[in-house]
Each structure stands twice: as C-alpha cells, then as structure tokens.
Length: 154
Ligand code: FES
Ligand code: FES
Image 1 (cartoon, protein in one colour):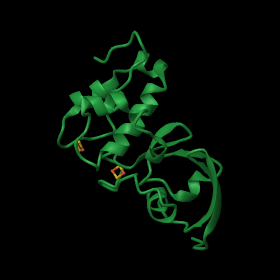
Image 2: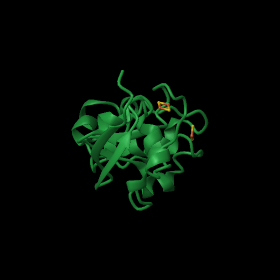
Image 3: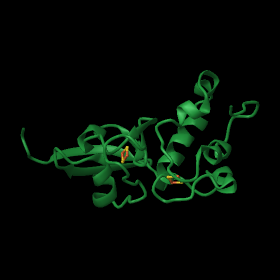
Image 4: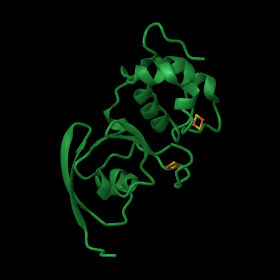
C-alpha cells in the first residue's frame, strides 16, 4: 500500500476543511488530534460502542472504523456543532452521566430527531441500538430525545 499522505477536502460542521491525512489514519483520530475537535470520544475502538459516532453525510457513523480519507468530498458533523439549546430536552432529562458515551448518543439522537420517517418505521430503541451505555441505562436516553409532535417513544 502506498503510504504517502492523501490530501482531502470535506465539510466539517459546515466549514470547508483541507488537510493531508495518512492513508491508515482513522477519522476519529484526525478529528481529535489534527483538527482540534476532541469532543468525539473513543470507547471500544472497534465499532461496538458508538462513543465515536459522527454524522457522515447525515448518517450516524463509527468514526473509529472509517479511514479519514473516506471523508473526502463529504460532510462530517460532530458534537462540536451542537449547542445546549439543541439538546435542552436531553439536559433536562439527565440523559447520560458520563463523558464517554454522551457525544455519540447526542449525534445518533439528532439523526433520529431529524428523520421522522424512520421513527414511524422503527422503535426509537432500535435506532439507538448502536450506542451502548454501561451506567445510566436507556430510559433517560429515550426520554431525552425530542420526538416530532404526535410521536411517542415505545
Ligand atoms: S469507539 Fe468507535 S464504536 Fe466504540
Ligand atoms: S452514561 Fe455514559 S456509558 Fe452510560
């Protein structure tokens, strides 16, 4: 494999970014250590916990599994784009307790909130199934998600 750095250009939280990445660099590490977006966290590092979730072209994605170069020409949204106002219901509900899972939970929740058609097809707990919580439990997470009016979590 060619080990030369790859130049990529992509949208990060609405801003065009250009940088060189190592071919094997994970998106998670590039975000945390090369672009100063440390809000995205590493848990398992192998695609099982969801702590590292970002939105890649609008879809929840485990950034620990994605080579950074695959963000080329795409849109990445991270926890840094979220304001307290955006997640006021989660804050009120005390959705999570630890800093490890919270960014991933928030990103997946924002995706669910933005896609009412998915909420019509799937149980909210199914949509959040990729985000593991080892301490608070899932009721607070489900309570904290802002459902479109008229929809209720099961
Ligand atoms: S750190 Fe990426 S899924 Fe757990
Ligand atoms: S609140 Fe973070 S793992 Fe449960």
